[in-house]
Structures are given as C-alpha cells and as structure tokens.
Image (tube, rainbow, N blue to C red; front, top):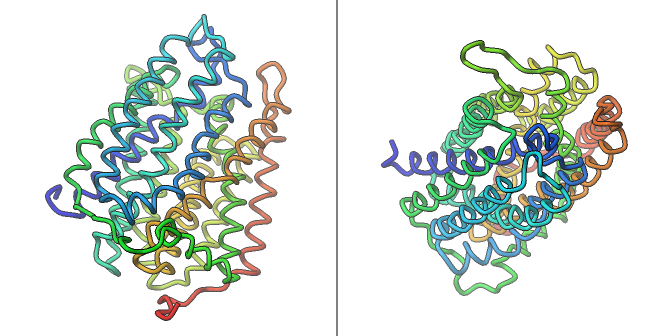
Length: 421
C-alpha cells in the first residue's frame, strides 16, 4: 500500500497531522498548569499569544506557497525542507520548556523566546498543511473521491497523537513537544519518497503565481458568504481550541482505567476526530446525493449544537455529543471549503487558491479570536476558577449568527467551473 501514490500520500497526511496534534492538543493545558504542578503557569492571555503564532503563519503562507510550489520548487521538496526546519525549531522549544517549567517557572521569562520558536514552527505548519492538500489534488485522479480517504488518514494521525500524548506520555510536560519535533524529522525524510510534483507556474507573472487572480472569486456573492462565515466560525472556534482541555479538566472529565492509568481530557477529545473520520469517509457518497449547501449547513448546525452543550455543561452530553460535533463541523464546513475552492480555481492556480483557504481559515480572524478568547476567559476567571458559562455564551451567539446568515444568503455554485472564467 505504501508503494502506491495514495498510500504514500496517506502516510504523509498521517505524519503531518500526528505532529501538529502532538503539539497543539496538550500544549494549552501544559502552558496554563501552575508551576508547582509541573506546568509553565501562563495566563490565558499568554496562551493566546502562543497560539496566535499559527494565525501569523496562515497570513505568511499565502505569500510564499504559490511562489514555492507553483513557480520555483517541486512540492515534495518544499515539504521536506520545511519539516527539517520545523524539527529543529520544535526541538529547541522543547529544550527551552524543559529548562524553565516546574517550580522555578517564570512565565514572563519564558513566553517570548517560546513565542519566537513556535512562530517558526507555525509558519512551517501552515505551509506544509496547504501543500499536503496541493500535492494530493495534483496526484490523485479527479472525481474519484480518493482525496477524502487520503485526508481522513490525517485525522487518524490526529487521534493517535491525542492517545499517545494523553495516555502514554505526560501531557503536562515538554514530552509532546519532543514528539512533535521527532515527527517532523521523520516526515522530512519521508517527503523525499512522495510523488515528484514540479511547479506548474513557470513563465507566468508573479501576481498569478501567488494567487492574486483567485481574489476575483470575491465577485461571487456565494463565495463572499462562504468566506465571511468561515472567518466568523474560525474566530469563534478559538474558544474551543484554546480552552476546551482545561474546561474538561474542571468538569472532571477523566476516565480511571485502574492499572492501565487514566484517560486524560486530551484522549477523550479524540472523539471529535473519530466523528470527523466517519464524516470524511461518507463525504464522497454524500456529495453525489445532496447539495453542498445542505452538507455545509449540517456542519454549521453541528458547531452550534457543540457550543450549546458546552454552555449547558452536562458532562454526558459534552462527551457523547459536543466533542464529536467538533469533528462533524470541521468536516462538513471546513474541509468542504477546500473542495469548493479547488473546484472553482483554474488548475495552474490551485496552490495559490488553497493558500487563500488557509488565509481565510487560519489568518486574521483566528488572530482576533485568540485575543478575544484569552481576554474573555481572563475576565471571567477569579483565583484560577473560571466561569465557563459566561465564556461559552460568546461563541454560541457567533455560531447562531453564522447559521442564519449562511442559510439565507449562500447559493449553491454550479457543479463544474466555467471554462471561460
């Protein structure tokens, strides 16, 4: 299987998402855990600064992905080089945290060097996440639906990372950072075995290669609606991404397995990715039978339900429904957005167009969302006790607005792109 093109691309997706999840899933709890309990003792606003790096990466990525992959270098070589650099940066971040966590931790001394190291890793992450989609679309047959199955292996990697960091390792430690660094090093070597994918943009103006012509899509009302809702949803999603792990810890969501240890919140959160895998596996079948708008509405409805249950704080409902709905919403709105943009963009500009999705999904809106989420949690926290109901009401209102606006204004685009355009 690994000798086939889909097999190698699936292995790339597994390693890509395993490495990202090994860092991002447990990091928020490690950063916020008190120094005397083994953490770094960061304030919620400090956590927002660290996760802000991925937003900055999403802003930088569109400026370089089109040039790197559409004009200058083969996609597989860019992925290899980026992950080699990411391995070095995350290794440095792990050593830095290992030196300064625990009883001697001083957040003011630790936060800004860690910010710089994670920023470099985050820029590489946003570039390689985009190129993982690009190399898959370029090397898989059109219309076969195989992309969805290759991509879902990435989510399986995310699930495994949550299990390893939350069960096998100590999530409140630098161990997950070391694991993320090793994974990038492995992927840097493995990328050399990916299908050779040379650039397609030789001879075209720089403005085309960096994807500026893709901005003409904003002349279409439905694309404007899609983009606006994507921005709003990803802004609101930072409340979940940054703070659902400590929220679950405060609710007492942890499973005691006796001699086999305990399932930490990071492991239980993998229920979202289990649901996401099922949704992605069903997507090719669903797209042949249902309108894209209806599937995207289902995704938005899932996100609204997720935040409603987080606000209610009923533990069984949170675990059994709210967490899976996170994966449901990501698959049926976020990933369908990548499919929508790839379908609408001309073939020679698809790397730049996917960069536009990266920018919309992880750029300025997420930057604002990180700041907003950190400040809202900080304002509703007294002596390490958080009023979570006051926190979750903010994204709950945001998702309600998103669902209503999308239902009213989005119109299903034609199934095939207009060749003249």
